[in-house]
Length: 146
Image (cartoon, rainbow, N blue to C red; front, side, top):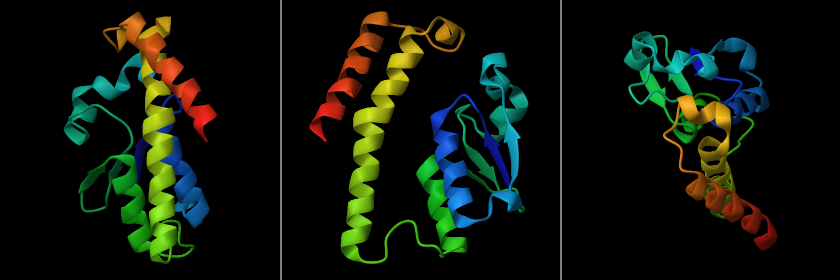
């Protein structure tokens, strides 16, 4: 398996942590793309991930799995121990609930805030400063809720 990743993006980090927790990180070839150099926009990478996003997992049979949760669920099905998605209905629901909250109430607004306000992101994003600042504020407010 090959994991297309980037040190600059939070989503691949989730998969890398998942692989490490499973104890199989050393069994996966990690290919680090430099987003600052737009390596994720090359025709070669777009052939793997047409949306130009990381992470992407390329299986030995050339099947491609995109999206963090899909990749982690695939890994979980191959390596069920240690179980990281829950072993009973309450654990499964709690893990999904917290994953969704952290993703949609904190991570996504933080990412949008960063992408729309940081000067270095202007080459990758048609920035809207007002939107970016509003997203950062949403992320900060979500910290007070929990």
